[in-house]
Image (cartoon, rainbow, N blue to C red; front, side, top):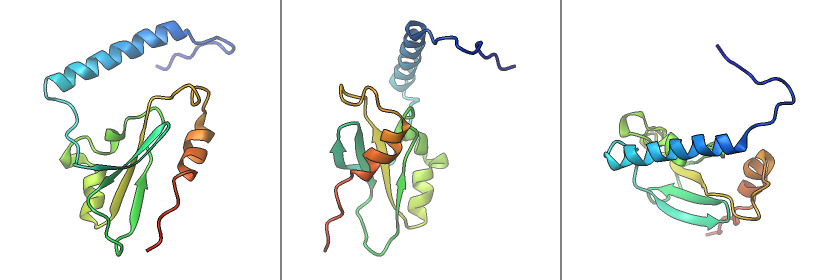
Length: 132
């Protein structure tokens, strides 16, 4: 049963922060036990405020490229948790060049960013592709 707060109720950010800190602690414990994500090797090809672009394998001009963009509240390994259930692995098997956006913690400038800034403005500001 889904319980929703009455309309106009404000979110208790202090409680949210405590719950999130607990969730992060649990994640660190899972990682420390060796039960965290097993990610496909990647290289960082671009670093900007609020995002890092990861690439898997060396680019091959004859292969189509795919950009995976997780929701801003998700970590990038949601697409690459374990080899047997990895979207990244399946795409590489299909001979795609795979790129993945990794959202970084917001800095002072990004504090007020909404979905428009993440899904549109940041991605569209990638440097232009060099011509060969």
